[in-house]
Image (tube, rainbow, N blue to C red; front, side, top):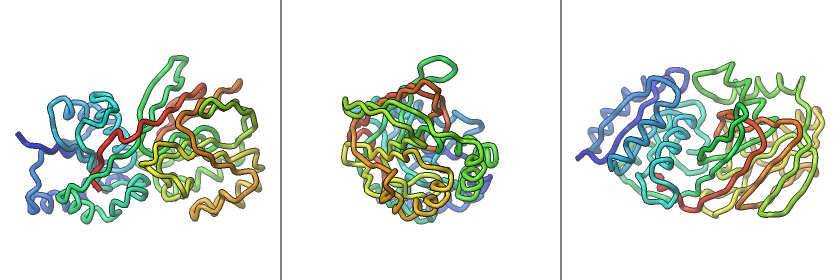
Length: 304
């Protein structure tokens, strides 16, 4: 039986993913990697394909695309196998615009170099987040590898997805930031982190497993994918001018020194609000509060 399945998202990276895979595929075969491949045709299909791969006993499922493709495959694998860490490995060939998980993992952003790494098959067991949230009045559930966010960052992602529906990246994200600044209002929330309750007004709440989001912003500079805890970053009651001034600092991770920015670690986090606050995972807006998050240590093996 073929041991590895490659799932290609051809429209990732604004359509450049298909052309990049045309170069990566013969390289992978030349290196002797034993694989089958399949191509996604619509949103959500990568998740179904990954679940089928897990059920059929593939040893590794490779995502060819961006963070959105990776997120779908993570959900497919873990929905099928659970979070005990015994399912297929995840491989990543970054061909999309958003490759933030790769940045934290140390996977080369050069897609051909990342392709070569698959053959070495060195793996790391990473933590995986699990979320319960609300969408269209119903309770929903998902897994995530990189981050979950609520508030201003979700408004930005929602708008960025209308600007660049085929993939994220820095330019659509930054354009959306400044457009959202015109209308966004900070939200009053109640947070329960590992059982401890706080109430405050916030611009954003980010439960970070990895260090980066938004196309290279280092939102949680000390976050680790293997420490069993979220780095919870709270952008507090920042004014619009304060958001504008501090936005460039996020790329270097120096925003965490601002007196209205707090960072703490937690294994579980709940967020409640009277006024609904939008919610996202790994750049994909999904629903709204109330939200419950928990982290499962060493739940997924990733080829690095």
